[in-house]
Image 1 (cartoon, rainbow, N blue to C red):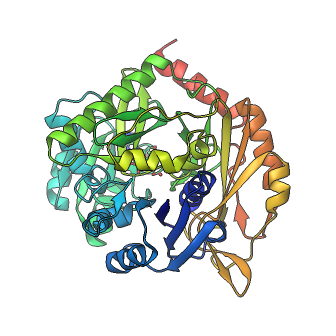
Image 2: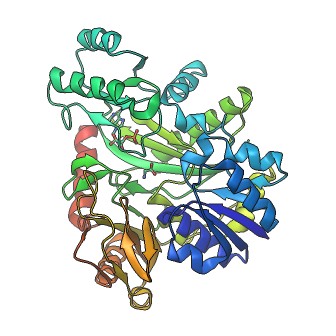
Length: 439
Ligand code: AMP
Ligand code: GLY
């Protein structure tokens, strides 16, 4: 099958690798020359992923039968709607369905209207004065978010990034003054607990859950520093996480099922991978956000252990006939190699080298992300450079394999959160959850 794959990051390389394994012929569109994607593509085009006309023209030229869109930005500008109008089926959501991610107030409003459990208190604002008046009435801690898309980097949490009323208001003013996200500010109740990612495949009505994953959003070891797109993630062989029970996971899946029904009722049925970010609190899972796509890095964890051919999964989603999807019972640990300064101001255009054979021999997989090829050299760009995934029977062994493999990625201009997936950090999460539960 001829499949159009849009996006040039680690998530998209993982998807392209999985599509290639399932025998698909790949036609890729990306803005950077991702060497992993290029190696698997019959043909590719370097252009803006949000240039709908160019992407559709390329898809038609290549005779694409099915499309997979990795990042949120093209979904937000209606790429799926345009591809469908050109007769190409899509395993990704329409612009209306992607609002579950592109508008945080749409998401909170939908969950509220349909009385879906797991919502948090929230209020949205289109000016700083009303927001300030509201904040003055609150007694508990909150989180400040731009309503629109910010690449996962726009969220600031009181008690972590914002330590006074003044700092909170400074950030609110910054969002309005710089028009960050382009759609105002949302204030949310701060949820306290452990975060986890539950993704599902969906064909508009049928839902198939993926293994649980835990991402690490903070830039530096010990969970400090600015929020990033995600520095790395792990998953366990039993598809749960060490701090969550299967009942709690079921509650999260139930929330997602209700969201999917609500979207169908609202006339925007959801087709594609849906990403649910939850905080496991003392009162169960609470919704942090939904994304209209795979998580990045989480895609690298789950797609590395996907047993069912991914091309078949995409085809079932696009054709409304989704059924069983199987994953290996293996643990995975993914660590992103990122440019120095990532999270604040990245060192771009710096040389980085990857020894793919040595990484494979270490029992790991490498996915290229936001890198480019310049005069035959691989160089860093502003976002995450290379994802390395260790795969084994246990998290501990997967972590060791990931670390072995990381020694084969070389540059003087990179850093890695080595603590991800290490026993100490995983045990800290388990202890934290015990404390939250009051055990
Ligand atoms: P988001 O981009 O919405 O995933 O937010 C980035 C990060 O900010 C999340 O992964 C959480 O760590 C944190 N965060 C977002 N919303 C909340 C919330 N309502 N309560 C506590 N933490 C939050
Ligand atoms: N890993 C978080 C995200 O993809 O938004």
